[in-house]
Image (cartoon, rainbow, N blue to C red):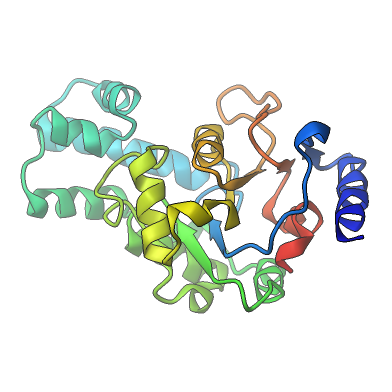
Length: 255
């Protein structure tokens, strides 16, 4: 009976033009109660037409040029090769030691998010309506202070006290690395054997793909490609939705 109800709900969600659900009938089975919910922060809990994202990108470019005298575009080259600009700067010897790493992270995340983001009562209502027995976390590629600034501006910081998994928790590794997902599970006290209980909302296809490889349930937030404006296609997600406020329809079992 539970399986039937779940399937009928999935059919209903799949029929919603806003949400795309990937259901494999051959592997369809009853899903267990989630053990933890992980939310990305930037471009996931909010969408500002990538204003903050563009500010961060420009800050990183400027830092590399002004602080390290690197050629224009080198920051992007490092990002493409290593997964994050910081990891590339460290691996190629442009940054040395924890103090310089901290200085870089502080500088490039100083983008004044409080001027770009506003409180979102609907987001707060959504988060407060989540099943209180399922712990929720922020899992971000940025630093904790940036995530806190975003959450504060959105009016939801108090809902994630001591629940932020940032790039330092993940040893500066790219978010879509296996080690970052392992660190996130360790932070949440979840064993590898119970990875299937992890529900993950993110706007990055790369991150969703890695989540799938790790056994997580991934939900893609945002269906428009940043660079091209085309529709995002992600076969690895359980469902894709236009915005995080659609989470209730896409994954009702967490409410």
